[in-house]
Amino acid sequence: MPSSYSFGLRGAIWSNRLSRFKSAARSSCAGHTAQCIHTLECQSALVLGSPKDSNAFHPSSQSRTTSVSRDDMTLPLLAVWGAIVYALIALYKLATHPLRNVPGPWQARITRLWELSQVRANHFEHVNINLHATYGPIVRTAPNRYSLNCPEAVQQLYGHGSKFIKDRWYRAYGHPEDAHADIFSVIDERRHAVNRRKVASLFSMTSLVAYEPYVDTSNATLVAKFVEFAATNEVISIPDWMQYYAFDVVGEFTVGRPFGMMRTGGDILGILDTIHQNLAYSSRMCLFNELHAWLGLVNHTLGHRSAFEDINDYVKARLAERQRQNSSLEGLDKTEVRSDFIQKLLNLHAQGKIDDADVFNTINVNIAAGSDTTSLTLSAAIYYLCRSPNSARKLYDEIDDFASQGKLSNPVTFSEAQQMPYLQAVIKETFRVHPGVGFPLPRVVPSGGAEIAGTFFPEGTVVGMNAWVLHRNEAVFGSDVDVFRPERWLGPKDDVASMERNLFTFGAGSRTCIGKNISLLELTKLIPQLYRQFSFELQGGEWETENVFFVKSKFQCKVVSR
Image (cartoon, rainbow, N blue to C red; front, top):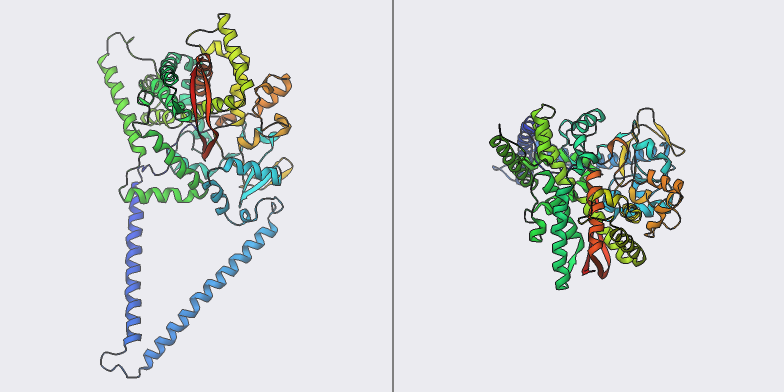
């Protein structure tokens, strides 16, 4: 899953391209104006005739009339012939294409607009599942784009050493030029490896456990809020509060302070709305990513400020604040300095291991992408446990049993929660039934082509797998794939190992989401903390979901103290 978004219309430095764009625009406008004036003059001459003698016959006028009439006939004819030629070429390509027999909606054979229309409906994860149920393991979703439900090909496409690189689809989620792209949207594998290697140690589980006290602080804040809700019998939006929690945790250990969302019960900085709007833009623009750079130029030319600049300004302010604190402690005991993410980045910067852009982009990675999978999974776990009372009862029993044996501290530690088998099964089953990302992750077939699941794909073909589809593959996960059943993860070791190999929530291989361990730390600690003290009563029936890359949910619960 993504670890960073430079989203949409952020407005980067495009000085050379911008000057060319403005120059071309002026030339175009000048040429267009001249043509319009010439046309108007000709039309005036034809309609009005000579100002001296309106009834006079002029052979030249007749000639111009004949000429214009021929032009009037020629242009439509050219357009018709052009359309016919285009259609014939398209039909020829369809008839001779090596993948012509791959099934899918007929519209997807000729245009990307069909897939765009499905994406715009905000439920593509279910569309994708139904496509494979109808057409089989390989489905066409657009010209040269194919969705796969082939567990045996996961490592081929996404594993370490795979030659299948990311498609330009990712451009819309970051800077349009690869040299400036972040760790999620960068396409060049060598550049990605270099950038990831610089900061990978900060995301290791060993490093993240050092941040556990910051997670405990946020957990305590959320628990206190839920105590209030239980006392007042208030109905709350669980997804909203899980988002507030996840963002405050990210703020706590990334920039040294929470965003204040749990304290105020809202998005006081407008960050959540900004990210949502940019996701909605990128999820549509990714299918027409060639337009992304030009829209950014137009936006920049018109002087429009992206809402994401507010987040950039916030990051700059926190960096400046920490640098001032560090300067004031030079030569003194620095035990007062927090050993958080921003400090570790500044330490690497001081050692010359990363540059200014690395510091800034890595903090943005955490803020922009560090909360969604966590909040979505927490929300989904509560929702499915509400709808599966037997599973909830087993989780309560395990928590109570561990607590009675003195195996559970308050707050719950990460190492303790890792030893709770049913809790771990609940987390994995939630990852399975509700993975964060609702789109296939597209890869480009390498030079020479490749055979995937018995079908040969020419080089340049775009193929991808969707976790929502893969996680419902009955050959891997059993015949009851639509049922929330954590017990499947407590079955025979070989079956569990197969399922774990195909758990695609965070992607796979070298492009596995760099924030995976952050999410696991929060989930593993918070779920037992909440279910130790509260139960949840679902209000209003089934939830609603919306797929804007991340599949977000809406539902409400009453919080009840145990």
